[in-house]
Image 1 (spheres, one colour):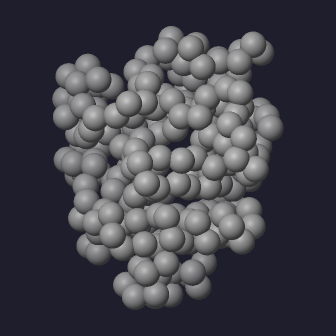
Image 2 (cartoon, rainbow, N blue to C red):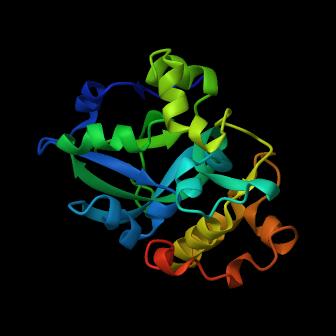
Length: 238
């Protein structure tokens, strides 16, 4: 996917966007809209706040192995997708932004291994651009992921995905994982009406046409009423 945004491929590349205190700004657009979720992943994060990100859209087109690991993927209905974002000139999304220390970057890369890390410049709610750019986890392609992140090693791809019978990560024919979608909607709602409305209307299925508002009103009936499994109520509670 062609993009004008700087791509960060290795841990050392993140140095270019570190602030003078050695911190890296991260954009949250799905589960990380929830500060509780963000802190469960990054316990030492700082300065959690809401921001605008122009020129990107949210899309459910990413097969997430963590959902298989946690037993919440529904392969038979293709409800296996988590979120990524992708450049889209006319779109804009409300995100969260927070800082982590650059020493946490290798763990961040390992956790978000299949994503393309792009540099973006968020704005605060008044429209003023941040003084420092942030990294956002974007869509890759399977071919680029294999070559760039796995260094061409198919056994690494299999180690992360093959054991779940996943042979394709980035797909446009899958649907949101129900537990995860509910969590993201609730997390956006907790940020306020503007963030909630933005999530519903500027987040799309893999067809890039069906908004989450439309999906929940048609195919996704009942999702918002379903409680997550007991062991995941804290993590996926909005």
